[in-house]
Length: 403
Image 1 (cartoon, rainbow, N blue to C red):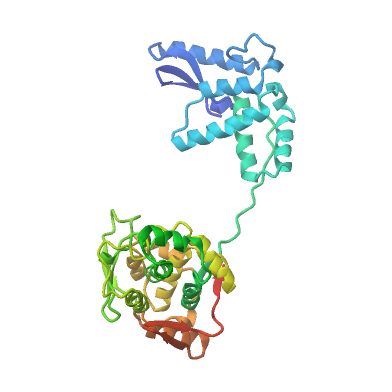
Image 2 (cartoon, rainbow, N blue to C red; image 1 turned 90 degrees about the vertical axis):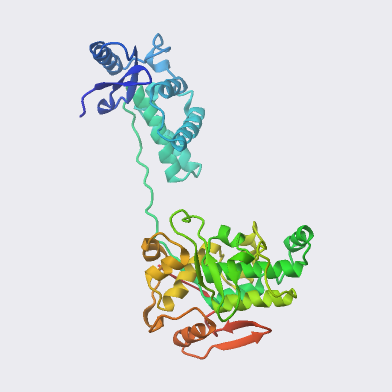
């Protein structure tokens, strides 16, 4: 057990009594007072607490009549503030709730079953184990500050299940892209009214949003800012500028080869709108998409797929690169990561086995066809509609998961 000690804080002498399970107490002495006087005050305060008498305005009241609310106010005044603003907010919110629910309970009752009864009520109300434990921890800290050892029930928190890693196959993404906005929504008309474009053009831009997110692995915010200055969409020698806003301070931008299918999607959009190129400041994917998850989930539901989000697209991009025999270092460079740890521990967690290409391949239509020859054991059917090529792989249109 640690011995009591004194220290200076906020112009006052304080007593550290945590070794006696009594917390930290302000001795109400200015730090200009000699240390010997502070030590004398420390042991006087310790004797007072051990006699189970309250300290402060309630000192003239019988011990059993001191209410939890008054003890909580004293605890806030004497205990050092949290080191961070987030910790201070958390403690203030939890204490406000505990004081509201236990404020009229005498402090003496917490030496018995008061906390156990309180936890039982929270459990019956359906509060999560972590919430119950937070409430108990703050209530117990206030009671210990009064010199009482509370009876704190043990709250067990179940161990989280092993994470499930999922990826979206390229065929699924192509199906989702076609299905997106097949059912008309009000968002298309509202966007068209604001930007002077037709609802059909809006839908095509959002389909490009899906393609850009999948084939580049960009974060959602980076896709929203993806402009005509970031891409040269030639199907043969196209390039795109990789910019990762999260790590841009340490990872510079890079010009990378444009996946062939993405180049075809971009060229098809330009042809449909009667243009030859994108304007440098033009937001190719339509800018911020506040209802992206809702729109994709609706389309995925019609296809029989589980709910989707763009984080899944980013991981699927790494999976597709790994199947083309890209190293972890190459994948990290493609996504703009600082190191390879995230690739190894989070993204590349899927079984690859014999699906991996024997040599490193670029991400183009031919490599996709070869990949699905290996996976499906059958020829993939390549359907051409205008300049957009949609690759179908029978029997493999599903989201695959692995633990």
